[in-house]
Image 1 (cartoon, rainbow, N blue to C red):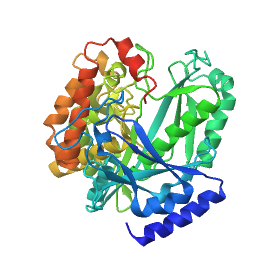
Image 2 (image 1 turned 180 degrees about the vertical axis):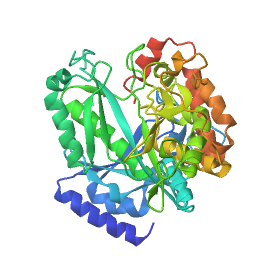
Image 3 (image 1 turned 45 degrees about the vertical axis):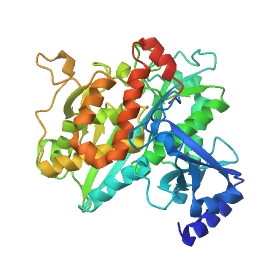
Length: 439
């Protein structure tokens, strides 16, 4: 990187030092959905910005339990990469005094982009769309469950109940204060359905920024929870048989300042291009689950009649559809079937790639589904019911293979297969226990 990066690093370091920051956490999210980190003293931030921080490419084939697999191009002890912080996103962590955070991009030693960098994959898909005159606004909903260290529940309040907010009002106040101190625009925070479950939503932004913000939100919630002697789980399954944690992706596509989800005379205000974009996403939804519901545990959550979006269908405001259309002033599409095990950069990049393929193909949406698909005499297709099924769809998707590139595609495939093998024959209780505190 050039001297300009070093100069920006010095300015950022001075700003952070003035806010009593001592260390900066540089994070990336691996193919298993785990946020990994290298920390640097704030006094070395300029050097990190100019020259990067060393790390092994083996992290691209880490599994959820920290065991390691291998792929055709990645794996083993050899090689090295450089982490470069995105200084524009550097922010003091409100729940971890003395620390700041910045997302990082990964490069090879020769200065070329690492082809398996998930954050750069999302950026590539955004750039691909921008070359066609398209832009996006996106946001993830973040759901989590809190428990005491001994496994007991800190509140027995009813689902969505004010009772829960009252029981944990100091905790939720501190979550809000921390997020807003980090310059995140919180839209709402509330109790969710499962015991001890909450959700927070932040304002939409560009897709890479939305993925960055999701990482920051989750680590902030985790930090505040620890200060209240609580543990936070973002796992898709926290208690087998109960509602799990989703990570619903909201996305709108724009051209020349016009929202394609509300730009035409089609169904519910959809324009032709907007419908084609959503048609591409719906067609690729089984394959996209390998990115957005990437854990064996994901399929303990993805069941009918629990608002998880278990069917390959769409509908206006239908919370049982895999793809939910939200019409009106803030028209957007919500991908309901994604969960908290997902790497947010992979998930959002994959969705954009699928939508662009839909535009290229002139895709059309089928008839929308009204009500719970599980109760229909002729229901739409179920989405994959296991990671093995979604992996098969992923391997068959030319759209995702081309978008990801062979090196990243193969690393993802290897990690998914290795986790299938890791949990083969395990009970739902075993799978949940092994993954509950990993995400």
